[in-house]
Length: 241
Ligand SMILES: Cc1cc2nc3c(=O)[nH]c(=O)nc-3n(C[C@H](O)[C@H](O)[C@H](O)COP(=O)(O)O)c2cc1C
Image (tube, rainbow, N blue to C red; front, side, top):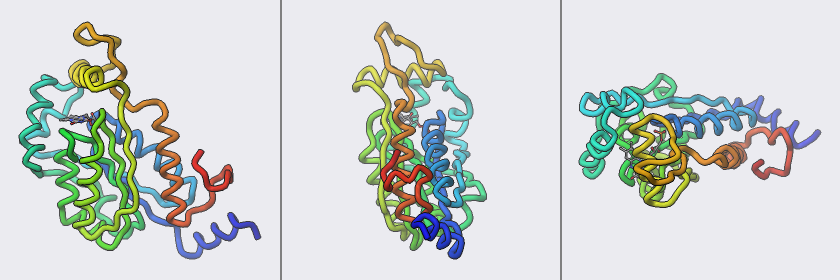
């Protein structure tokens, strides 16, 4: 019997590993990573659920209810006080994030002022997160313009405080140096599309770089290895594609 045959027999016997991808997304970049990961995890024999957190708190929800933002600078900078004090607020969780029998939980966390966004912090400190994470393995994927490390560490810390066992993390950044990527971000949030120039300066796109797909797939493959999922369809020796 081949190794892949025996592994899928084991999966049949013990049931598919259950994976939850839970994230907040405003401009869909975190969701794109979640989709790329979900596809690979499914191919590897996992039962995958995605849960996008809804940011419903009346203090901030209105500005994020449309894209582009009505007032890019004011709306973004207006989140600074809440982010600095580590505020939490009202969120709505889909049913998928209310079940508790997952083998692995992947938290998708966009960076807002270096830290996890209000909705992700609200989720990670919630009773629902405790039910999901207690005694379970979890991982984090950070999506940001540039600053990922504080965010990733915070997700790790908050998830661990809820009883989760942190296994790994990954981050995805946008193109461009400090100034150009920041100008590009304000352009994107204000105009709703990437443009060649902003305030006369040539700017890169304010979205995931094209190689995010391979990175997300390789990461998902590593996670599937840890769950004992089926071998990769291409059977390339367990390396990411
Ligand atoms: C309020 C706000 C604050 C942000 N602050 C930062 C930051 O400090 N560092 C950074 O690299 N990106 C920052 N960004 C950019 C976001 O990280 C980026 O837009 C986000 O990851 C995109 O994910 P999404 O498309 O899933 O919403 C900020 C975005 C917003 C809306």
